[in-house]
Amino acid sequence: MGGTEGERAEAWLTPADAEGALPLSVEAGWNQTLDDWRFMLSDGEGIGLRDGTGRWIATAIALPLAPDLAWLCMVLVAKDQRRRGIGTRLLGKCIDHVRARGAAAGLDATELGRPVYIPLGFRDLYTISRWRLPEAALRPDGEIGTVRAARLSDMEAIAAFDEARSSMRRRVVLHHLFRSAPQQALMVESGGRLLGYALGRPGRTAVQVGPVVADDEEVALALVARARPGTAMLIDVPDRHRRLARWLENQGAVRERGFTRMVLGPVPPGLDDPSRLFALAGPELG
Ligand SMILES: CC(C)(COP(=O)(O)OP(=O)(O)OC[C@H]1O[C@@H](n2cnc3c(N)ncnc32)[C@H](O)[C@@H]1OP(=O)(O)O)[C@@H](O)C(=O)NCCC(=O)NCCS
Image (cartoon, rainbow, N blue to C red):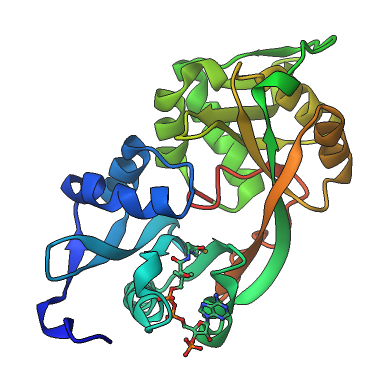
């Protein structure tokens, strides 16, 4: 580390640090809002490093997504501080914390993050593409059939549906999304049975659509077609869902970058199977 080592201080982060941490995700070009940071720092355990002036220069958060799974996210090091072992050190602390709970650590690695995670023992599960749909490319959808707006009173059924298909117990995350953008909450039912849902949230540069969880691709396509946030849209789709990717491309979506879902420790059953997970909540939220 550099000559200011003595003045640097690691500390656990609180929701009050959200404002100080936001410039790190902005510098990286990420989409999170202040509200996202506040949520992650209240539901998760975050660690950060300050420089001698009090500026946060690195963060990492472990978000509980199930008793056997914590999600590592917001692994960020200021550009001028990279390649000095800071990211690895903060991650190590988060991993110790997760291991002490007896849980596995999961994450969605960026192309910059993956080389840091491999030496720590993380294994690849599957790849994901981020699609960006510019506002101008949005066009009215066709016949959508049974898609309807989801209400707060639907959220318990949605959380139970999600848990059986995502290997995550992320009721708290799903409620955060519903509160952030109730107008993005959609569901498909048939004969009183839930077949799929979609949530979303506002972002710094675009509305993020996801998660989209459904029992088949037709339902997922109907949900995404109906999502139309009326502004630029981001959606993170596991690469095995080729038909959804083709549909997005036909709508004018551009593949912005890729992620790799990775895990350290015993893989929670089903986490390696995205067959019913058509879009992530986001790489930071599982
Ligand atoms: C990813 C990130 C957090 C890494 O932080 P860092 O403090 O620079 O990482 P470290 O110094 O601990 O790197 C540890 C090792 O990972 C590997 N590594 C890190 N960055 C790398 C890169 N850009 N290319 C290749 N290898 C890399 C190297 O083996 C490195 O060891 P070395 O410097 O001794 O060769 C930082 O680049 C960053 O903030 N990127 C933007 C945000 C992001 O993508 N975060 C990851 C989210 S999944």
